[in-house]
Image (cartoon, rainbow, N blue to C red):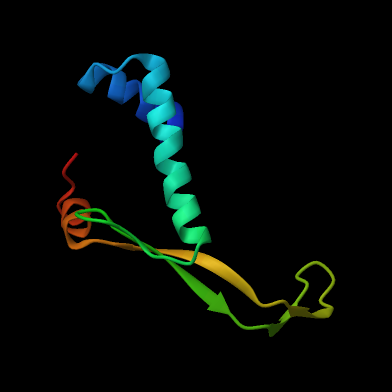
Length: 96
């Protein structure tokens, strides 16, 4: 099962009694804040959940798997996520 923005908004409506439109705006703003913070080069730390950070990858040689032709993979910036200890423990213990 995939958890979507709509699912998160629906849970806010059910558990926190948010109006549906306000819940959708809240979820959209939450993710936009994370994205814009990362875009500006800052780390995002969600205590008890984990950290989103940026990593710069250098160019490197690669291979097109379809043709076998060698190509150069361009340098790029990627987002990484490291789960926090509470989330790791919860996953390891199988709690819902």
